[in-house]
Every structure is written in structure tokens, then in C-alpha cells.
Amino acid sequence: DSGVTQTPKHLITATGQRVTLRCSPRSGDLSVYWYQQSLDQGLQFLIQYYNGEERAKGNILERFSAQQFPDLHSELNLSSLELGDSALYFCASSVGLGALRAFFGQGTRLTVV
Amino acid sequence: AQKITQTQPGMFVQEKEAVTLDCTYDTSDPSYGLFWYKQPSSGEMIFLIYQGSYDQQNATEGRYSLNFQKARKSANLVISASQLGDSAMYFCAMRETTNTGNQFYFGTGTSLTVIP
Image 1 (tube, rainbow over the protein chains, first blue to last red):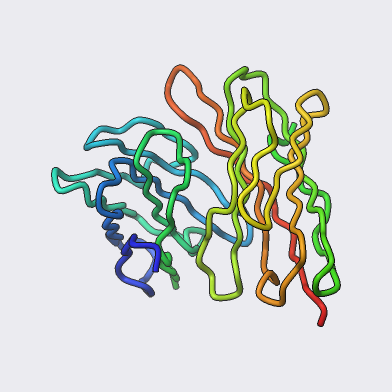
Image 2: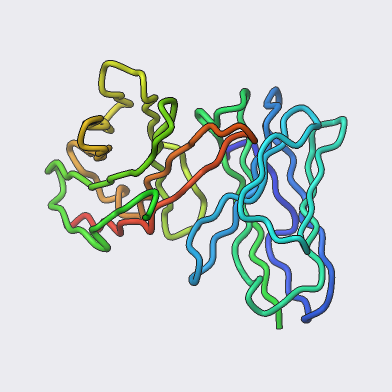
């Protein structure tokens, strides 16, 4: 158990819908990272938050947004979903900014039908 | 150009033998970090090892070591004394530090199978 909790584990939704993925980091970790893993694109970095502030942005679509709350949990919002958004979405957390020894959650498997 | 290149889609190794998984990277950032992650068939991602661009010595974590050749832009993972539980996908990744924050790049992965 990595200590990073992601919910839900699985999500099936229709095109055009909006979903929210949730991540609770390990106790003491201030950084949260979101990644997408798909067959087409492989592993991609989406966004990083540190202590409530956005610190880095990767290949995150405009239809996607994220935030980190005062209790340090994070949510990734995906809207106007398309079939191509089907993927495994990982959250990871680390103490500092550099992703050293980042621990990953089990992922949320999103299927858009 | 690809930021991270893993040229071995699949590798086989005999149990108890050592194996090297290749990774080359491309960056002009003087301060970068290199990571290896393991993804078993169950799907979770597990951090294995980290090497900073300024680290003089190769990183080691138990049976894992990173063969860092800076001039060649190479960061190969060496797993010693392979175990059946090492069968998994292995991803090489790089962190660049830009003026807008960190960027992370992943390779396409190498599937390692340990043969009894």
C-alpha cells in the first residue's frame, strides 16, 4: 500500500459527460501529480500541485482541470469526455517539488463509451 | 526528438541473472532528474530509483542500480539477481525544470519477463 488513495477505481461514463477523480496523498506529502496512461499516448504528465498551488502543467487538455484543497487532497475534473479520454489516470504524491520517491495511487480506470 | 527513448520493447532474463534495461534521454536543461518505475501486471506504478544530473555517483537502491553516463545521455537500469517478481513493465522518466515549472517525460517502457 503506497499510502496514496484514488477514488473511484473504475469509472464508466458516456461521451460528453463530466467526471471527477479524487486523490488523497500520503500523509506529509505536499506535492500531488496527475498522469494519464493510455495505449495511444503512453504515460503523460498532466499537472502538479504543491501545497495548494499549481506548480507545473504538462499535456493537460483545456477540457481538464485540477485543484488541490487545503487538506491537500486533489481532484481532477474531466469534462466533455471523448472516447480518446479512456485511460488509466494516476495520482502520485511526494514531499517536495521534484517527484523524488513519489508514491503512486492505484489509478482510476476511466472508460468513455 | 523523443525526450526519453527505450529501445527494448521486451526483454527476457533467467532467474538470478542480472539484466540491463536501456534508456537514453534528450535535454538541454543542465538540472534534470532521471527516474525508473516498475509497473506490474496489477497496474500500480512503483518508484525504483532516481538519479540527479549533478550526482557524481550512480544511484543504487537494493538490487537496482542506475548506470548514468551523462556524456552519452544514457541512464540504464541494472537489476541484479533477477527474481520472478521482477516480471513487469519498466518505465524510464525524466524531469526537466523549466521557467514554468517541472515537466516530466516517460519512455514507452520495456516489458521484462523473468524465466525460472
